[in-house]
Length: 148
Image (cartoon, rainbow, N blue to C red; front, side):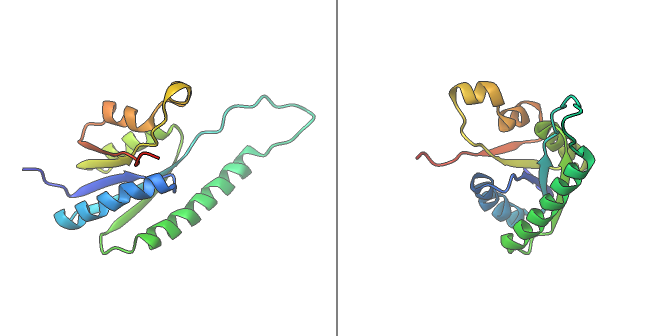
């Protein structure tokens, strides 16, 4: 029988991600599981330094992290649940960081929203959810968005 003690649910703070929590929270409540909420700040692309401009990468990354912490606190508060929630902010490749968190926290399931990209957008951007389904070592529940 499936036992869930730890559930990981990624968020980009979008409405699509919020729908995944509409399933993850009742699952966590039903099994008495803890919920790990991860937001990944994508790695910044490398930009060749030029004398005509100055861009302080560490300062920008710090600002992104602070904003992510603010959004995460508001998001967790908005969830309004008795489930124990562990927020995680990570940096880097989104799929890799989600998979790493799943391993490090020894989660029993990942609940992830799909954004439904198709065509060239899917080819260019890929699908984080697809990578998670393919590479995760635990069950993955994907939450598809309603058709427009």
